[in-house]
Image (cartoon, rainbow, N blue to C red; front, side, top):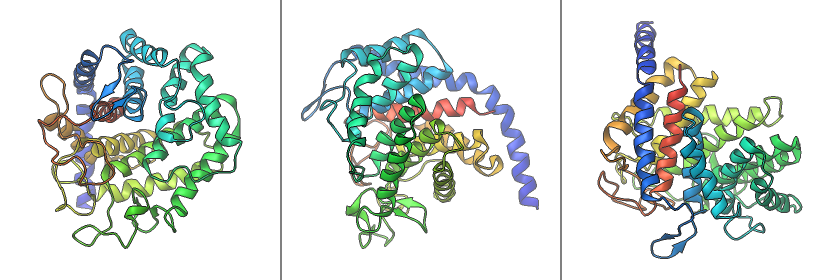
Length: 370
């Protein structure tokens, strides 16, 4: 009882702080986004690393998802223009064209659809719709064989289903989600007991972390949590699939809550703090994004989750944001905790875009809290 009273007192003390800090949230989002836009003024410029990548790959797509979330709370014309320029530079097309089934290539479509909904210009949605429609013409449902793909592809199908009032999209995405969840790798990539996901079949048991626990990669689980949020945002609550996604969202959130570090971050390896443990922005941002959304929608208990959400957000702002807007502690691209190490404040990751996208998603949801 005393503990409940203490939590309530803490919560009541936090509510004024949320209102007072909305300006600070906008300030830090403006700073970090401004750093990126200034560094990448040409939205169509290729990304040159060990090889050359077009700028409509998944990493950049995640940034624009974050930008559109930021635009929803700070509707500046320069943000809209920047996003439209990106679509136009790529002729609203996908990497590898409309025949691709790869969710990474289709991720750009989430922003194309968002921009279509603003101006209803059909060219913005034609190619991504054609790509998804070509998938629906087959019976193949095993494309999402790594959990990142759930975030890259599932919300897009939900968007199209909502726009065209066609439940075929909803049905197919549910089939694909369930195949990944229950069948990939033999028995699926979701641990129905621990409510966390293995990144792909390479990490299902008997694979273990050094401490003997399952390998649950932070960012990978963040992708799934974000996918559930973005999908439920589009899916009618009357859909027969909604309750399944909501249950997984609640179960994951409860599991993740217990794994938060004392400093507010989550480790790259969720159940082995000794295996590349430390501050990491992307997974932490995605968990904050998901939990803040859950609080706002009334799906997660505010007194239970808000302290963790604010602790995590404050940690990101305090420990990751440079004076010029660069973000530190971003794990580079990969598929497991060991990739892109070491993760430090000063280190620039291989791609700077997706980390900012995750941060903008988190901050935009923090801003919406009441």
